[in-house]
Image (cartoon, rainbow, N blue to C red; front, side, top):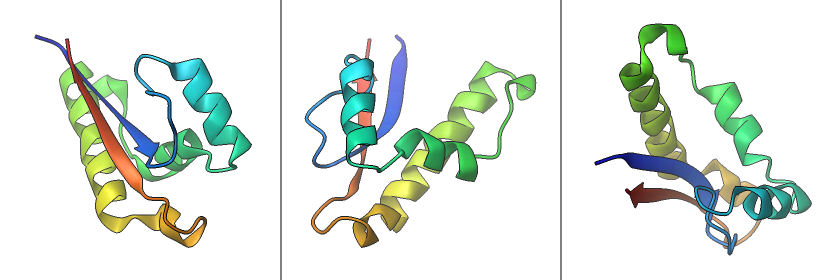
Length: 86
């Protein structure tokens, strides 16, 4: 069973896993730039293998949700972890 995880914001009505283009358009419109944030804070590489790479990304997403640094930008908006089991 495959598992996908993504970082989103609580106000984004789109699923970043299944509706990526709409999700990204909304995210950019609100100037959250969630993907850019993940790129800056996640220190991993595919050279370590896909399993380690995905674990590192999920750990970074968990930390982002915990720290909730988006809340200073937009009142009542929080980072959320989106999980999809295939």
